[in-house]
Length: 354
Image (tube, rainbow, N blue to C red; front, top):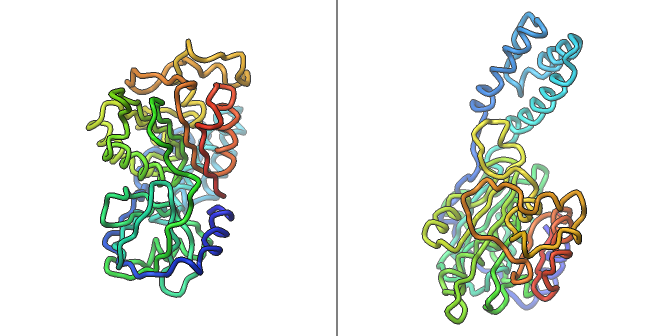
């Protein structure tokens, strides 16, 4: 949550009144994946038995930490240091996922008591029971009767644990807003639209993209605009609204969602992109429209490299408007890549948090 957003919401409190809203749907977007993790680790257990000659196969990765650590140390002692290091990294990653509280990614829909008018990209301030209010980007289109938020659990947070664990359909929230008048869609033009996000940074983009197609803003003076979404997360089920975006792409051939996951390969069934979102973006640029000499050497190699989707369209950065939303470090990394591509400052919008 951006301190700037909090300050704006607090400054506007005197002008905007609270209203009640009723929760109509709450649904986990992530899964409990303990069984998948244990099945994947069975092969590593066999490796430890055969190569390290451990007496007992390690048990549940989240509960049997000591046994795993000792067995991997035994594997390293046999001279298989690189294999042991790779296994230790994998086990640590999967253990962290297995120990994660569920749900950690929540869809929350609610119906305001009074009409709530907003534009895509704005956010609302909500409170639940006696907890301190917090601000969240609105994920639903303004054309919907209900509002929707995408909630990421912050383990020690003041509100998200209650929203994830205690809310139920029919409960009441207090709603205030809308806020924010800087991170919004620009007026339609001939430029293509490029949205880049990680995690819950997808929330305002869901609102923007749905609204774009509902209002035929993907066309300008008879010209069809390509609409791109580059969305990154660690795990496949941490990609908010993935199925909704895929459905929207089926309905609109000029919408191109590109998903990238950094850790899903550990579970064996991910055939999408795996790079950072800014590197995935570079793979989908039109090579003849990009001067790689202007890019940092460590990222220029991604331009024109093989992609993991069947999308044939490519991006001309000089004819694009770019929207970026996510944690500050990600936004900074994207900016460092986008600035040399020739996207005018006028057509670059950014919202960072955390």
